[in-house]
Length: 293
Length: 321
Image (cartoon, rainbow over all chains, first blue to last red):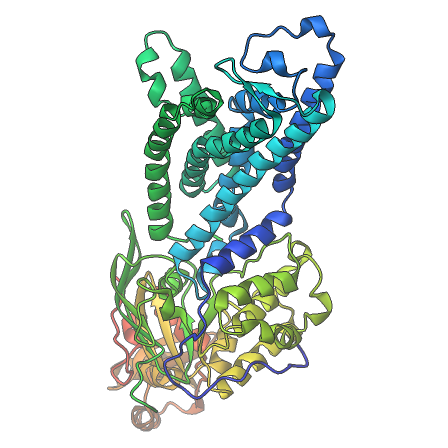
């Protein structure tokens, strides 16, 4: 600093105001930029791409007579590539998708604490509510991209392996390949409903623990514990209200006629999990003291 | 000067963490154009009060107004305000320029246009493409100043800005602050470097145990503290006894073979006459220069707070218990 450059000139004294204020969109855009720099982003998206490919390799490595598993669509894996994304949706609900989603949702606030950067961004021209909204939207965007990417890779890999063929619905009717493809993507969108609830839980733990590892592992643990409740003897009655059950709601689309009941149930049950978590995260972030860093 | 509210107006500011009171009823007014020194030993509550001024933590009681607006209510209160508390922080995985681009986007207006000049000002233009994770403490400190300048602030709050800088960097930092103030910026400078504060600041607030023990000009503080005189004579024992008995002579004691005491000029003239009349001859009788450091220690250590801040000071003085 021995040769001082020109600092911006300051105007004559008056109450200063920013005429073009930044907004949620600015936060959203820069949170996406930040994701591009972080390894965890690629870890999650990498898993979303890799898992369908590994499924294809595993199916190809197995002799034909071993394909007699009894889960939905498993019998069709070798008959239509469109069964592949649906099978992965079934398996991914256990821990893979919750983990991928938690990698970003659990980190997005906690990493600011880790880097001590919250005080840096909170002393600019943005309100806390704008920063929260931008970050929450990015966590949701990442989750949606991961699920849709996984589904798309599964469709392509599955069709390359087993062909773009018609699909048998859960009611036993045959669905044409184009209609099947449409149903696969609508199923992926329905799958985003419980995923959004997981995002909200991740955001809550991220603001609450201020520790990325604790928030990511905590989100996964909560997801696993809810599944565990579902298999405990005597707790069958709560099954419809568990978050884990809502991961199967998309199967209503694969029935003839379409069964909307599980989808509608998923919407409000997931809201019961997600909305309080999101509101709590928002209030914590809005009111917390930023004393570290 | 217009009727605009002052850049900083703090009233009755309190922050408690359970049993601990970190800030205990701070009142502070920083007028436009001030370079205001904010002093205190570690743990006195400087950083906590700066965080409250920037809206980072909520006061337990009291109010903060920046240009008349409350930073705990609206982010608009930070318009025209910039600075950092403790060490400035950035995203370590992004370059210096990328960090500034992000912050400029969060500043609104066209803050991006100032990135190059801000990097030039702090001499980081050559390292702008490097990841901040590899920066030294001093470089981050300079980047913190650059980030503040993007906001074209009218009020700059700086917490120990010279920390981690080498002597040349510290000198340049002082020059920069002086120049920014000359351009019309109001500066609140929290610092441990008393020489820096003495050189730069017009007014100071000295904090002790969460309370302001002095607020006003350094000159008034020195006047309030009284001038310390040094006396050497042919008979120090008798001289000391005479000092102790003389009206207007305070706190006589022997230090390094010399008698020191606090007095004004009239009392010293009377003392010299008393000494001569008693047959004690004077070798040396001279005022000592009182530095801000002396005043700082007298206010923040022991129970000297009330003694040092005399009636002439403008202080809202309240000695800590």
